[in-house]
Amino acid sequence: MTIAKGGRSYEDDPHEGEEFGYVLSGKVEIHVGSHKYTASKGESFYFRSDKTHYITSACGARILWVSTPPSF
Image (cartoon, rainbow, N blue to C red; front, side):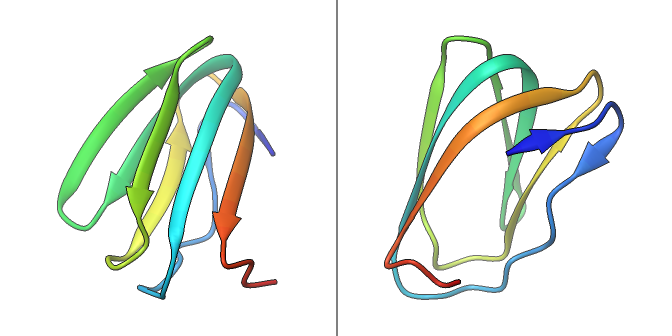
């Protein structure tokens, strides 16, 4: 996924499963429920998908994002 400077992913409602991401470039903020986490190039993130979640990036980023079970 590529997130433009100041961009964000769509807001995903709670669902069954788990999510994992690896930041290929840039920096992202991962919003899960009422919490916010930061990950930069070379870092990864993981969370259960049982809360509303989305990703933002002030500077732009490219990430590898894996969701299970796939919901697309």
